[in-house]
Length: 496
Image (cartoon, rainbow, N blue to C red; front, top):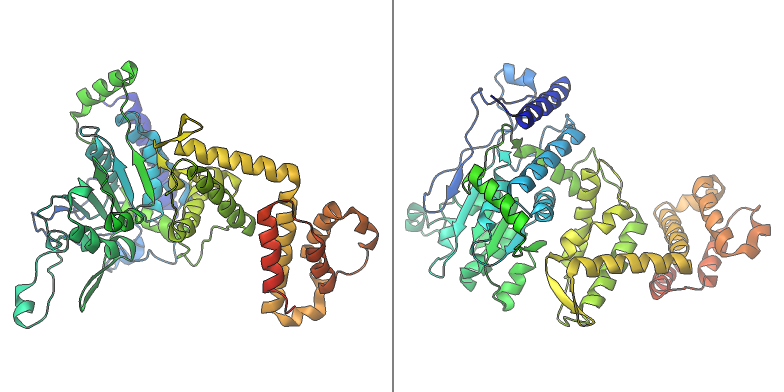
């Protein structure tokens, strides 16, 4: 007999399947033959089978056409998957994992963002805090996925990750690796006891984790790696590990929790699962995650998540404020330009998970999930404060200050003028038809009225380029960031 929760779950998935089938998506059921995903460990040396997606056109399937294979392939470009349904599946699984891995809800959210953005995650804690259990539970959410796992040790060599040398090729004078069953072919990667690996191994992982390429002399191979989750009981800092750590856009510390009620919940979940992930009745095809990540990475030609210039600007303002506050207690605190640029992918993912196709300030508030190391604390005015709280303080203080001083309106005006100038530079013929751009010009006029009330009497005439340039010149910045924006605008568009 199924429990009430199990019956509700089956009902939810059945309804979602009906929606997908109406859109002609092929659904794989448990009783139908399908490829078995390979959960390979380097010691097994097993060859990972090709992966099949569930989005194959059913009419082509009847004709005997092969479905899309290989988890790095793009999905059928003529099909649009039901994004709200995928998101609802994902949200349900996040709740399911959070219930079974007690006290890890925010870390589970962080892990899902890592997978959607095709980035990597590092979990830190003392021994016995169920890091491996959590990672396995997350990976167990997906089907038709190739998984590589390895427990690091100081005796390992790069061959343990990239495969042994191919003897036949070696005899011909060519250095080639036998990559079957290696990290190079895997979609999801689990690296346990990460800092037990030697610097040589960690350095060799750099290009695979970041550029998704294995480079060994003349041997260059594209790696399938989508997301890696690494775990460690301690941090080992040097120039090599610092470079590797920068490849992990998501970091969490799993804290100790001596709350007796929490421990009771853990007892119950352990009695049910015996410390092993419980298979859900329905897993998410990993192709769905690839589909979302293509949208988030701006690789989908049909679906785009819009990031307004105002969001770009405020992202950098708030992150810079956060870094400045962190350096008051940790003077070496650093966020690389690479990571700061990649934060835009997180913002798109946040919008998608909220069923939106435009990034808003709400997504900027969520940015702490990638900016901060969760559950990491710093000393602020002799009081311990989490990095998350430091970020949220920076967010709130910036928004309050910018709203009260009028900086928000100044930023919107300058960015609007910048967009207008950029359009003129790319389409010079529009200079002769400024009166046709009524929509944008009316918006700019509205902002000018608020910032320059004395100009109301001049609003009836047509706006000219010279008037816009004079507006920029006359604007008196109320915060340093607006001054920098104004100076950059005047420098970049002096030719207009």
